[in-house]
Length: 231
Image 1 (cartoon, helix red, strand yellow):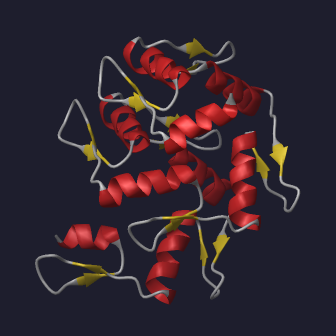
Image 2 (image 1 turned 120 degrees about the vertical axis):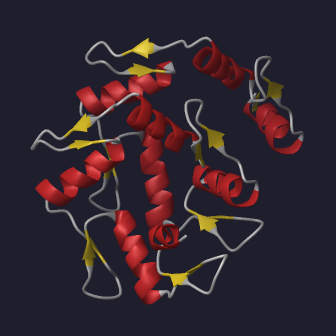
């Protein structure tokens, strides 16, 4: 039952270890999915394009979002999600103010998955090493993007111009900025960024006074890229 699963996962700490690696799943079904995807390379090909999912549920979401144009409109604003899960997270984050506080610092995430990534990166030092070079990512998705971009030469061509992005996220930002004129206005001044990440950097630097200290000298940067260049 759902209650039994909840008690086992949240309170009893029941785990299902993978026989082929160090992964431990919270349910037998999740363990089977992990083995199918990571070790047996089971794939679910899309009948309409070259996409191949690692799970049947992922394929269903892909077809609905990319080929059938299914959207889940927000009842509180103009946002429309591509999945029910994304809509739920949007409503909780943007309209209900739901936050997931970190137990080890003052960080509060807008979703459980973001909190998990934060804890792994910032407090547990978890890294995902690339098997083909010395690169080590802070998340599985970043490692995937690195492998596709650097070693497999995967590109995401823009449908409106000759630009080809190295990640789907970069392509989305490019289309929004260059072709749709999308802007992210600063809530504290007249500045308008072309990407959400640029707006975040602007707010941190200009309004919150966030600084990144050099561990080897007294240099103080306004963003991580400037600190990296300095070091």
